[in-house]
Length: 488
Image (cartoon, rainbow, N blue to C red):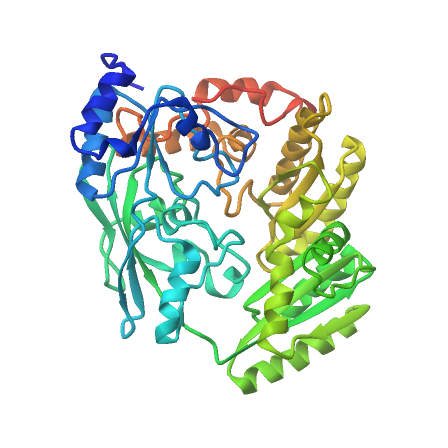
């Protein structure tokens, strides 16, 4: 970051209060406390101050002031992220978009919605339902997470297999640059000339700009949707069944897997009638017209039986379908009831390696002496191992982080990557060195510099400082943990 003349906390607050209601410029420690972390509470840092603007012009002015003084800015949505991507900088400003919570327009003919970044994911579908439409990406935190945060992390959800991630469902984004310029990325056209900056911005974790408006695609609510739940007596059989479904030409709306730990925890949590004796279960949703759903459900049930399912149950009502999904979407808080703490990982692998990777994770569980519950998007190979631990037990957090680092290395070795939808943030920044070469990381830095020459937007996240990469590579794999090298 370029060195700038220092400005005190009180001087900065005074500048912000000149154009933002003083109630929304937070400087006292007690009120700052809720902003010290996101959903990844392992990593915490108190910010210098927090601002909550409610107009684009105010956001622009905040960015101009911070850019002038070289002050770090961390844009924040609902704070549901799971990689410490919204963790504050101790010498910086948290720019909360919580007051940008309006649905600006829904066009039922064009099937689009214009949204401020603080609109909750679920609220989009609730409003669009009036027109028989909904928004496709549905992360488990959709009741709370915001569309701005979804863009920052390229969020997915249980239905991303058929309907895609955030990047596949947005049309354009309005954002404020590090210098305070307002720009629009993307357009209503089917294509546009030049580089695809919209794809570059989606998933950039707040490093390239501050999103102030998002235009998304809406989908017609399917005529029918039904879920087949199949229990298996081994992970191998369940993993083989995932490939079997896709190989037979069925593209489910969602195809999720849970292991025995997650099954019992979720069933205790919501009472969904999950097969508690199963080693793994699959939830396979098929949607469309009545005729095609009936055909695909019959094929799916037959395939599951053929591939070794010990139990097969199909939802008959919308209420039953919602209950089966509720167990899956409640899996994270459910696991929280069986362990003092859990560490949620997020790696992606090719589907064909599901059984191998899950078996290796089980071996690592034994090596590290920590239980792991697996609940994830099996259809696209996006894993979410939940490592169960007790942060109050000496050394257990460090052991958990080392276990997590080993899982991510395993994903890369299987031909996958270190994140699917949670982002890199602080949590996985060391594993960027595992996946990318120094030259590739240098290119990431060049992109960052092109958008943010002073380096004020979310510094210390996502891309490791190059000077530490060689030190990391020199360590033996067993020495790699989530906290073994500084970042820049």
